[in-house]
Length: 70
Image (tube, rainbow, N blue to C red):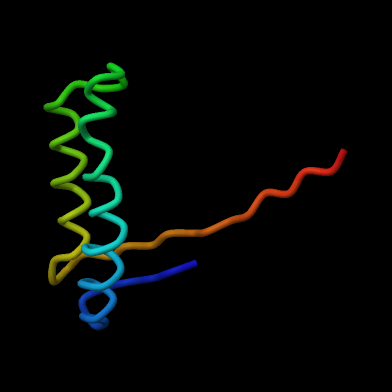
């Protein structure tokens, strides 16, 4: 799990903006081509992600790993 707020400016820049948001922004064209959502909805989601990087924002993400047995 990662927790980021404005008290951790290195994580705001290094993880939230440069890693997570950049990763999501990088698949916009694929998402639009596949018809998963409308561009207006996509843009709102990206704006909402950037709001988590503001002075009063909080970003929390939980990583998990799945394992299958046969």
